[in-house]
Amino acid sequence: MNGKWLGWSGIVRLGLVQTAIGAITVLTTVTLNRIMVVELALPAALPAALIAWHYFVQLTRPGWGHRSDQGGRRSGWIIVGMGMLSLGALLAVDATISMPSSPGWATLLGVVAYAMIGGGVSAGGTSLLALLSKGVAPDRRPAAAAIAWVMMIAGIVVTAGVAGQLLDPFSPQRLMFVATGTVATGFSLVLLALRGVEARIGEPATSDIRDRQAGRVGFLAILSQTWREPLARRFTIFVFVSMLAYSAQELILEPFAGLVFGMSLGRSTQLAGVQHAGVLAGMVLAGLAGSALKGDRTLFMRRGAMAGCVVSALALAALGTAGFFRWPLTPLVFALGAANGGFAVSALGLMMSFAGRGRSSREGIRVGVWGAAQAAAFGLGGFSGAMALSVMRQWLGTGPLAFAIVFAAEGLCFLLAAVLVLRLDHADEGASPSAIPGGALRDTL
Image (cartoon, rainbow, N blue to C red; front, side, top):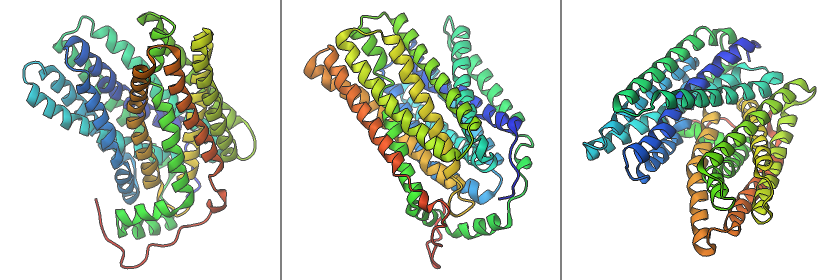
């Protein structure tokens, strides 16, 4: 390691990249979803399939991480990813506008557009997190993780609010105007934020250069080597299980408030806002506590991730019980959000710490493997949660028991994730994995 770390200004500047990613992505996964279903009266399955497709494409994250490892400088790959994301977003808008008149052609264009969106998020996001993992000092990683998450959410919230106002009343021309402005602003922000920030870390160490040259053996061989690292493998499983539980609740909370508690659409939407406020509070608290406390930050983040998972499970159990006793939903939803936020920041902080374990110059591919696990969990989580609820409602009706069973299943996933945190083996943190044997496959993506 070169011994140079990013200061707070550098961390915030990289957080602006997260802001841009969140701003452009929410336009395609939320705004266009609403327009297709409501304004254009298209089947809800169409945007759902396109969003699921963009998550599937993110399974390429290890490949993008490998490319950024090979190149040494990650800023270029972040810009490439943001360019793909920006162009994909504009194509997605064009596809949406063309749906009523040319459904076949527009659907094909949408498939291409959402593939670019998934690829852009993969290339840019993976390289960004690898850069943060490489450039942030250990005592600042909890706060850096909180900054990255909060700034991404800020991009989502601000864009959703501003775009919502500008799109009312809706017209295709307004949509294209808002989308172009969002994309141009986001991409320009990324260019300004990245300018010179990676140079502050300094040149890679000689050992890093040697490892990078040795890494040119090939992607599949390095991916296999990474999977053989006990810590990387166990953390991948933890990420998948915890993010599966995290995402499975997204499509259930508002139907629960409406069907069981009789809340109106406006009140259930406000309840979702309470949850997001709790998430932000949990993120900020975990980030500040992790950076302020003395001692082993990695140990603190492990305990924070485990505590967040356990409290999330308890909050889900309380929500399921509330349906029978009509307990107030607002404090329970806020508590669930806070636990989710604390867990998410702790998990991201652990990722930043674990990315550099073992053989050096492998941050990108490790982050890519974990990012692919998260994308798979998010794609599967929302679907499985909604499907489980549909099955339970068909068997048990719209009463609280159906929701309680689904909440209980999600809580069990969080408890399993807490157990997996305990199994993260620190005995191998400083060990380097075995070298790739001579004559290994020289495959490339």
